[in-house]
Image (cartoon, rainbow, N blue to C red; front, side, top):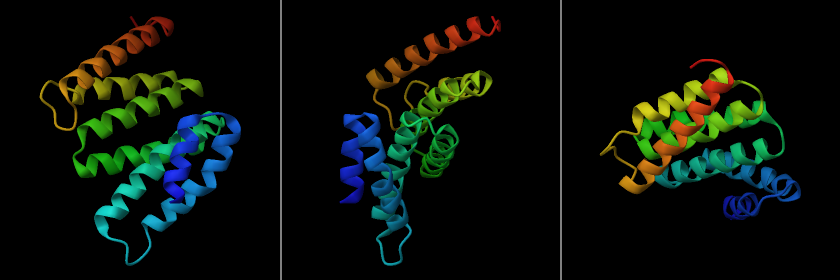
Length: 150
């Protein structure tokens, strides 16, 4: 239940909601590692907790923590072979890198996203994949132009 409430608070947004969500999501993350929890449920709980913790920490300006949670999410999604999940986590991590001034890292994340989000990849329907690729390509173009890398 803590994960569900934390997720809803982060989705609504705002600093106060994110502050309320963080301890709930941290509790859910700990619960995902508890003995006796079904492995599939534990993985789902961990992924949700990491995803929303990364977003909440980014919204609160705790970029190091946001990057930690989002990087763990990227690794978990890679282990699961969830290309759509990896792409979404890379997109979020690129936004965090950009917000904390790490443009080179943001570009690397977007380039990796473009490498994996190929037609027919698992975990992404064609419409979502196309939208993600167009968005990533546009952001990447802007980032490169801003940093003189074109």
